Image (tube, rainbow, N blue to C red; front, side):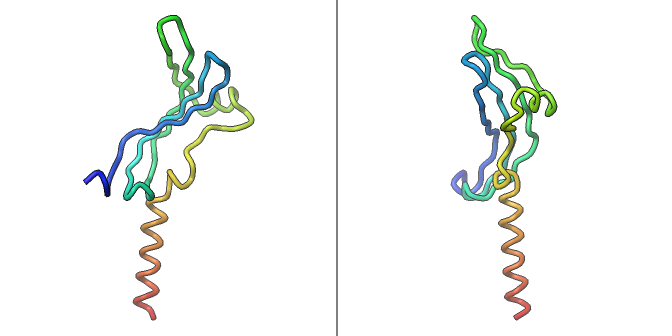
Length: 99
């Protein structure tokens, strides 16, 4: 079943310094590893401490302030790929039925 459908949490990271990393996490549902829809992006700042990595949640504005050149974000295909795939199938079916 997991070959065709999947879901869970994914993350992306951008290192600011050797002891600080920006982290983006989002939830997703996928179909055939190709078409997925993502939601619920959460940002955090991970800082290395003597006891391991400590994470602090960030807002979008704090994230933009820490990394103004390249905002860490969910890729448009990972966010809307499933919706685009379903819409493409519906358009093809509509065109086949019209002609």
